[in-house]
Length: 374
Image (cartoon, rainbow, N blue to C red; front, side, top):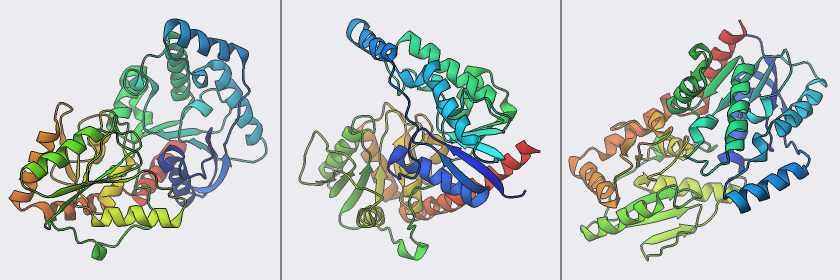
C-alpha cells in the first residue's frame, strides 16, 4: 500500500501527551509511522449556545440529570463544518479519528476510520451516570451516524467492539479490534528488568481517580499483606488518596511531557513488584500495557476492556468485581508461594512485545486500512 495522506481529526490538541492519557498523541504517531503523512485537524472550539446553557441548568437544577452538549446534533454539525473547511485545504486519502464525535456528521467522500476505546451506549450507567434522556437520545444518534459514516470502526477491546455490534446493529465485517500500546517512549530493554521478591514487597498504583480505579482495595491489600507478616509498601501515582499510612508513598502528579517526571515514572515501574489497580470501571487501561512493558504483573478486575489486555497467568490476574483487599492479598501470596513470580514477569514482558505495543498495533492498523480501501 502506498503512503497515505491522512487527516487526523480530534476535538482536542492531539500533540498534548496529557490529553486522554496520551492516546490521541500515540495513535497519531502510530498512524504517521505505518500509514503515511499526517495532517492534524483538532483543538476544535465550538460556539456557546444559550440553548445549551439553559438546558444544562434545567436538567441539573430541576431534574437532577446531566446534559452533555457535545453529544447534541448542533455541536456535532458544527464540528463537521470546521473539519470540512480544513479538509478543503488539502488532498487526503483517509480521515482517521480517535473518537466518534468530530466525524459523526461529516459530509465527505473520503473514507473515514475511527479507533477508540468505547461506544456511547456501553458507557451509559457505566462511566456516564444519570444522563438526561435527551443526551442519551442525542448520543446514541451521534454514535449510530458515526458508525454508518465510517468505512472501518476499530476498538481497542472486545468489550467495546461487541457492544457496538450488539447495541447499534452494525455489520460485524467493518468492526475490528486492535489493542492500544504502552504510552511510554523510553521502554527498558529486557536486561534492565530484574523483578525479584525481596524483603519488602512494592506495589504500584497509577491512576487519577482513586475511587473508580479501586484505590481503597489496593490500600486494603497492602494493609492485609502486612498483617500476614509480609512487609508491603504501596506507591500511588496520579491522585491524593483520602487515606494515609506510613507504608504508602504518594506522587500526586507526573507530567509525561517533562523528562524528569517521565524518568520518575519509569523508575517506579522498574522498582516495583506488582501493578495493582482493581478498577471498578475501565474502558481500556493503557497503564496495564505500560506495566507489561516493564515486565510487571498486573492485578485488576474483570470489567470493561481490561480482559483484552490482561490474561490470567500470562501478564497478571483478574479478579471479580466482588473481590476485596483480602482476595487480592491472597492472590499475591499464592503467586509468591507457587514460585511462579519471575516466570510471570517474563511472560508479562512477552505479552507486551507480542501484543501490547504500538508497532504491533500499527501493523494491524495498516492491514485493516489496506483491506478496507481495496
